[in-house]
Image (cartoon, rainbow, N blue to C red):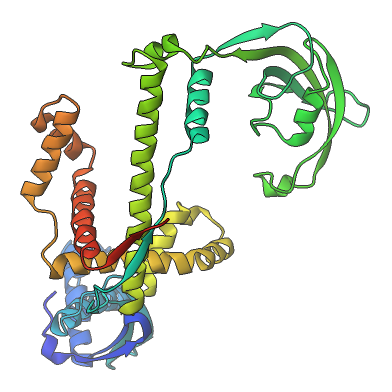
Length: 423
């Protein structure tokens, strides 16, 4: 439908955190004209007994379908008036509009209000003169040894043991069944395979398994701990029967040149150890840089305070929660409240980075993306066009663009402030 925006009475109130309340009045003659149009449209396609199709008088239609026609007309009018009013006031909502104070009586003006959020408008004037400490990132021999130990475990072989009770890091195969009041199995039970000490079973079950030997069975009273994932089971007590079917121990290979050659393109264990240290140092450097970037942006936010719309914070929080529609509304409100402070901070970081990129022309260009794709292709001995197609198919080009933009922004910012290496 066409609606002359000049016929509308529009007022906009600015509320807290970029919330807007737009009140609209649609004159009675416009409402009546839309009702007549809706009735005429329905008359052209209606089939009523005693009338030919398309020949039903409009007054008959209005008498028979008056309530439904009025509601249809109002729905269309509100939607059209809302869009026209937004365009007239040059407003761009970033949240779904919520209708309030809808009032209409036959042959009277239609009035309603819609509240929504708009994108925040702010400036980032102070960008320099900050001092940020870069955390130390020294890699200890103990950390390197830990990685080597995991490599040994990954290349180990499980050997069965016919005797003895399970110990830490042993793999066990067990059958567990619940017992009834008569100490007879209440169900068929289930088979499990787990590693002792890995946290795969609750403590009381692990303790029971540790008392058995392969082929033996025992009955145990267990209590579900306070941190059990299923909250409803926390504190519950059960009597169960555990049968230890098998016990295995992990035999790890020697930490020698043979292991180095087995896991990669290394001739000696020293080469492998050196590569591990280099990779860990690189990762530690990246983590230290991430800390610096985070602190720097936080300092900029504190120096350039602004508010963000509640709807943006809520959307970010829902992204963290995941599937908010499947959560009880009361619990969802609690989760949102808990996450809100950090979610608001995260939204501000995103907006500030976008603002700086825009104002200082730091956004990644097509050439920047092409150069990065070529780097990725070269590092993987692949074709740049193929890498680009793979990134495009996986929907990762946008994230690559964002990554390059953020790097440009942070490089720019770190040149504006003092970065001090921690002692």
